[in-house]
Image (cartoon, rainbow, N blue to C red; front, top):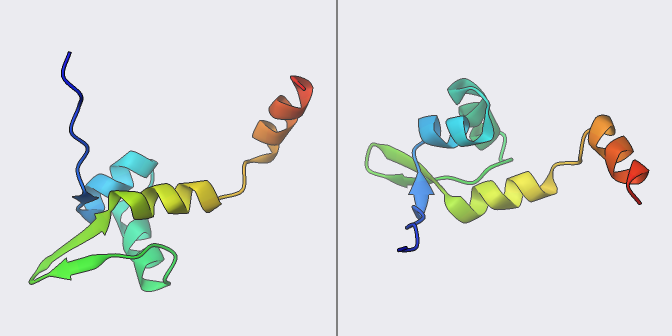
Amino acid sequence: MADAVRPLAYRPKDAATMLGISRSLIYQMVAEGQIASKKFGAVTVIPHDELQRFLDSVEPSPATKAAQASIK
């Protein structure tokens, strides 16, 4: 089976869908510098690696921490 091709960047709407948040929240996060974006003319994109970096930087929820602690 062929490897899936990962996009290099996503439009804000697609990035929001991937993270399970609203498009307006993505734009707010970009404006606040939490997520870096690139602009090509009228098109804004968010690099895939930037989404991964942001996701990795978010602290796990208390429920996740409790679940992880219970399996150690």
